[in-house]
Image 1 (cartoon, rainbow, N blue to C red):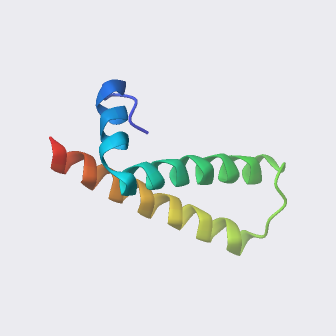
Image 2: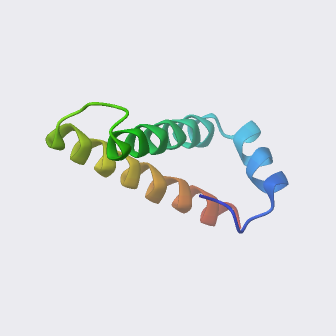
Amino acid sequence: MFEGQPQAEIEALMKANSEFRQLYYRHRELDRQVLDAELGVLPIDDTTLGQMKREKLAAKQRLLQMYERTH
């Protein structure tokens, strides 16, 4: 998600901000689960998949807001 930003900045922010760190790992987990569901590896219904995608997007938006506030 933060491919364009220096990894050192992201790591520093994760160390300094526990909310950022928790959201970052939650977003990664949701990303993996959504991909698995779309590939058919994780059998879930469409409603649950939609909820996961919305939660993932909300986490991404919050992470980006937090990142932008530090820069």
